[in-house]
Amino acid sequence: MTNWVYPLGSAADDEWDVSIGTSDSSLTVDGWAHTGLKVATLPAGAAVELPAADEERIVVPLNGSFTVTVDGTPYPLAGRPSVFSGPSDVLYSGTGRAVSISSADGGRVAVATAPAKASYATRLVPAVETPVELRGAGNCSRQVHNFGTPAALEADRFIVCEVLTPAGNWSSYPPHKHDEEKDGETSLEEIYYFETQVAAGSAAPADADAIGYQRVYASDERPIDVSAEVRSGDVVLVPYGWHGPAMAAPGYDLYYLTVLAGPGRVRVWLISDDPHHGWVRQTWESQNIDPRLPFGS
Image (cartoon, rainbow, N blue to C red):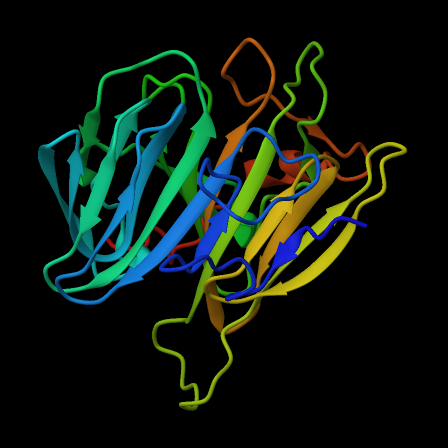
């Protein structure tokens, strides 16, 4: 069966810690066609290059500050100390443009991609303009940075955002799917890139192992069964099927960058809940948002 889970290092390619589904990726995944992700850890003064290609890209600092040069024009991204520090500046490059990413002090950066035909202008989205959504309630509370959604960014194919889940909470829940083009649902591949940390204020030992969990299971005759333990740098691919929860284990906060795109004509995220669990949404009406949110406040 196709491998859908890539622990840190298993999808590396030269200077990239992760390189999956992009125009220059040497790792091929059977049936994967609509989304891509690259992640690099840059020493101080280093740079990575992406040649012009028929794919749109959005550069997301994970920690540290960067300068992104698109066809010779530099765009400084202020960045952040970590993904749990709140939103970062991000840069949408458009298609058919060479991209260089450098960092004076070093850091870690992600590039979400999707094959695209329509060309849109390069756009810097400052952190202060990123729509921050607090979604769910109670132990299903999570924080979403919607910098690459249709309402926030003009783009051709992909939908990109990041989700932060406090320790002990469930995210990407109730389990849902987006694997058919039909009324109320769109067909979208999805990439989850994870990071974890010991929750603030925890009396954790120095060797604490910050973990989370991701679940994916079949919604039709296509087989898929993922119950993955995830840590910083791990990737889970969701080609189809019910997915969720993404679980932040007690004691450890969970972050994921999510990249979605598909073959449909409309760039929109429409989902169907697993009918066994969709009722949980109604329980949120009587609960408050987790007071630990927002991260970075």
